[in-house]
Structure formats: C-alpha cells, structure tokens
Image (cartoon, rainbow, N blue to C red; front, side, top):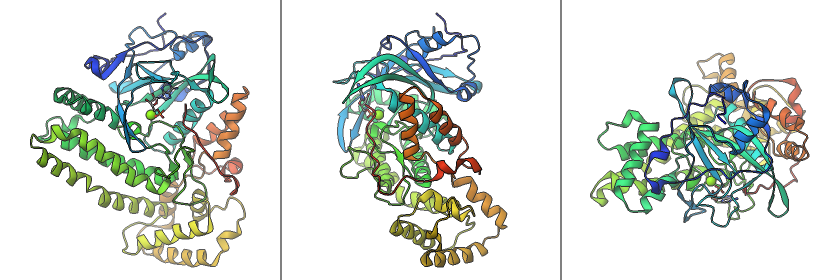
Length: 484
Ligand code: AMP
Ligand code: MG
C-alpha cells in the first residue's frame, strides 16, 4: 500500500555509517486504531488525509504499513542518566523517514512504542496509552506556549495489552522533530573512538541544522557555541512557564534545541524552586531550580565528546571548550533577567531589577503562591478572589514594581502587551491532565479534547477557562513516572 497522504521522504540519516543505527521495521501490531490525529500539524507539514480511510491511517501510524519511500531505522545513542554514562539507543522507537514540507523543511517522523530493536535491552519496545497521550498533549501545549519542541502527529491504539505493574493499553505516538540527534548521539560516536565517524556526525549535524557555520575555521567550537545558546534559550523558556522536564539526561537533550522526551515532566503550580515531580528523582537532581545548572553540565558532556575535533592538541581543545562552557552563567543570567523583566512588563534596565524580581519570587515561595496565576494577577486579572494578594508584603512589593514601571518609556498598554506575550494565563494543570488521561483510558476523549482546545490558546483571555486555571490542592503531592 502506498499511503497517499503526500509524504515527501528524503532520508539522510539512514545513509550514515552502519554504526549509527540499526535498519529495522516497526513490529506489526494486532489491531491498530487511530484515536488522535493532529490536523493542524498535518497541514503545516503539507500532508493531506482526504484520500485515506481510517483503517489505512491506523495501519500507517501503527507502522503496520510503511510509506513507499520509508527507510526505517532505530538510532544509536548513549547518555548520562542521572549522572551515569550508559549506551542506549532507540529501544522503543523507529524513525520511519525524513519528510520535507514546504520550503524543503526537514522533519523526522518517528513512531514511538513501535516494538523491540537492537537497543531495547530488557524492555518490550512498547509504550502505554496514558504516557503517549500525555506526551501528545504536553508537547502540543509547549508548542502553543511558543517553546521549541518536538510535536505529536498521531496516537494509535495497538489493540495489544502491555504489561507494566498492571496490564495497560498499548499505543504508538507519531513524533515529529526537526531531528532526533541528541547530545547522547555525539557521546555514542565519541565513545567509539573513531575520529572519522565523529567528523561525519559533526558535518551531518551542521549541514542539517546550522549550515551557516559550514565554512567556519573551527566547526566543532562553533557548534558548541550555537548549541549552548539554543539550550540557554530553551531552559529559560521552561523557567518562564514553570515547566519541569524531569529527566534531563544527556540523551534527552536535543542538538536542535527542541524540548524532547516528555516522560515525567510537569508544570509547577505553587512556586517552590525545589519542586520535583518525578518519582525516580529521589535527590532532586532535576528540580525546577536545578535545570539551568544541569543544562550546563550536559553541555559540558557535549563539549567533551567534541574534544578530538576541536584541536589535535588535547590541552588546547579542552581550554577552548572550557571557555565556551564557562560563558554559560553570564549568558544565562542576562537572558533570565530579561525574560523576568518581560514577565513584569519592565522595559529598559535598572540595576535594582534583579532584587525586584527576586523579592517577588521569594514572596511567592514563602507564601506558597501559584506561579502562573500571580503573573495573571499582575496583568490585572484575578482568577479567583484570592485574599493573598491583599498581603501587606505583596502590596509593598507592588508599590515598588509600580514605581519601576513609571521609569518605563513605554505606555502602560505596551507594558501589558509585553506581559501578555510571555505570561500564559493557562498551563496544563496536573490534575486536569490526569483527569483527561483517566477518561481517555476509558474511551472518553471529551475531557482530553477540551483540554487540548484550551491549551492551544494559552495567552488569550477567555472567560470559559477558569476551571482550567485553578491549581490543584496544595495538599496533593503530584507524582510522575517515566513513560515505560
Ligand atoms: P527514556 O526514559 O524514554 O528517555 O528512555 C531511556 C532509554 O530506555 C532509551 O534508550 C529508550 O529507548 C529505552 N526504553 C524506554 N522504554 C523502553 C521500552 N519499553 N522498551 C525498550 N526500551 C525502552
Ligand atoms: Mg529518552
């Protein structure tokens, strides 16, 4: 069958040396049934579903039928997981091909949950419905929050049960990414100690993602600089909306700067820098406030893998790479300050801005106040009558903020416009996600679709969404689990 939906495959990664991947097809599933299709993303990708029936779509997004030009592979990679180096790879995912959309924009099309590969180790290669729907809705939410991310095109139920602690519905997610090349991909090739392979990977990545540095004198160093900046921007976006990735292992850090691998991630409601949701993150390594430093740590691992390509003289290579890695703090601090200024509608710079920002965060922390809704309040919209904003410390802070706003050259409309562009009025609240997943597991997709519809407009004021803006009870300790 040629699934005639306008695929325009041009597979480049599968042409790389054998050591980079395993050629493998998704393992067929018993009874595929498509349950979600992202029509808006499909149209961005220039795909057309009008000539294909539901069975064919189900077969396609389950991997039972591959597009004619597919050349499917599982990618090899390694990674530091909670600080420990391991050889990994796509153990439950297959890249079916690279699709070129308009203007030849290249997208990896990956089926996640597609069966065992050479990299599966003890796993079954499968994924459960709940976690795949969770990835779908949170990644789409991130996209509409204007945060670089992989996206989700479809979810298919496999008609097979998978065994975890209990028996669960199996599912496959179609993930779309500008590529699935990770810090861990470089670590994998570097660990093989073959400089020619590392060079191939470097050139491939630069050609695919950053062609502007193809002719630079030291491509490896330039790539390190670019990836560092991309990752700083990404983590600042996460901090802006209170997103906690939950498992920032180096295999889950994309070279393209997209958020990837939505496992135990969740959004913080009550402001506490130490917030951790993941049940396996016992030490809080990936807590909200640790995300910037972990980003730097991961970038240092990336730098290490590039050392042989930076300079033949190892000492010189290390020195040059260290200098770039050490630029992280200043870059982060400046960009973070600017991001927080935007959240508060401050234009220009004032030496005291940092204290103003920290005072607000400290107040939120001490009083356990909802992060998102505090900025909504500052934008003049109180979600629920909340006495907490009559607190005298907060009022004092607000008077200082107002004084600072007066030094803005902008009108108050401009300032509000700025705030509205960066402060979401709605985020995927943990209890709402759980509610939607629970219903979906019982074949009721209404709460899921309603939530999705609301998350598609996170910056727009809408009276109907109050129920989606209220945080869960403070007493509920929310826990997330890895998507296995
Ligand atoms: P993740 O926690 O999803 O980032 O996955 C970490 C590693 O475990 C990757 O190499 C995955 O491919 C692998 N993995 C996760 N779940 C499974 C599974 N059910 N079967 C095989 N491999 C898996
Ligand atoms: Mg991963």
